[in-house]
Structure formats: C-alpha cells, structure tokens
Length: 99
Image (cartoon, rainbow, N blue to C red; front, side, top):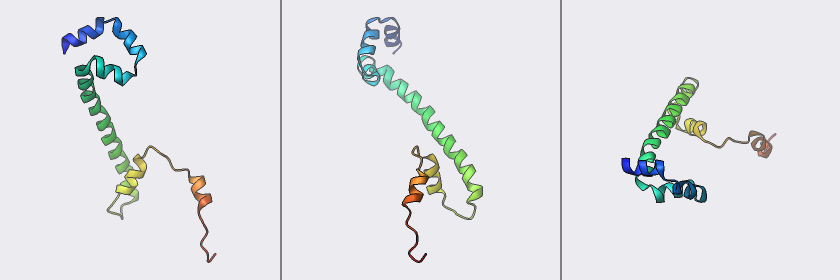
C-alpha cells in the first residue's frame, strides 16, 4: 500500500486520468486499495458526526417531550435533510366541515 501511495504521488499520467474521469471512478480503477482504505477511515467520521448530532437533538427534544416515552418520530424529523414547506402545507389543509 505504501508503494501504491508513492506511485500515486509521483505519477504524472494520473493527473490526466483524474481530469478525464469521475472522481469515484478514478480512485476505484487506478488505486483500489487506497480508495478502500480511505473509505474505511472516512466513514468513521460521518457516522460519528451523525451519532453526535442525533444525541444533541435528543437532548434538545427530551425536555420538551418529557411526558412521551417515544421520541423516535421527532428525532427522525429533526435529522431529515428535507425541510417541510410549512406555507404550502397550511394552504392545502382543509378546514373542518363543522366550521
């Protein structure tokens, strides 16, 4: 693996290949061992970040939802990447027929 890394460092043709291909495709084809090891290391940071952010959200939600035992739905909504369009949801809401 060290030899592969040294070859990468001094390989001038790899620069041309890098510009011509997709980033993921380049790493998987040219340097499969390096790409596999890099992914193993980088995945630790993303999962640690997600765990820490989830725990932080739990600490924010828990005091306000003390009377409920299940906070899974609230955490799922808070951790979601997509944010709801509240204005559109309010305008689509039908009033109760008795009012």
